[in-house]
Length: 59
View 1 (cartoon, rainbow, N blue to C red):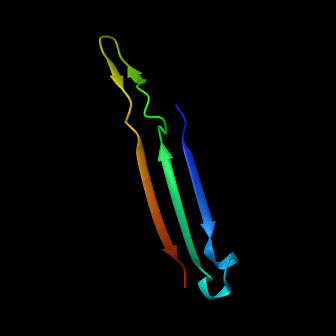
View 2 (view 1 turned 30 degrees about the vertical axis):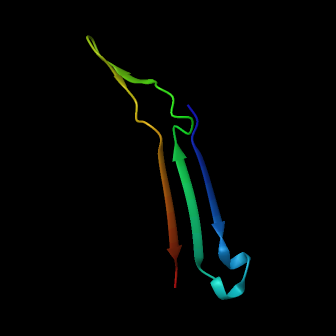
């Protein structure tokens, strides 16, 4: 299982965007089935692929 993330500070591209950042994060990037936990009787599969994008601005 692979996770990945990319974060970029847009203020480095253009000074007028100072304080603005964007990010994309992915968990279970290739959407593989995997066992995340087993107890005495049962085993449980982990989460499917999850992708989140965000935009942040700091004043």
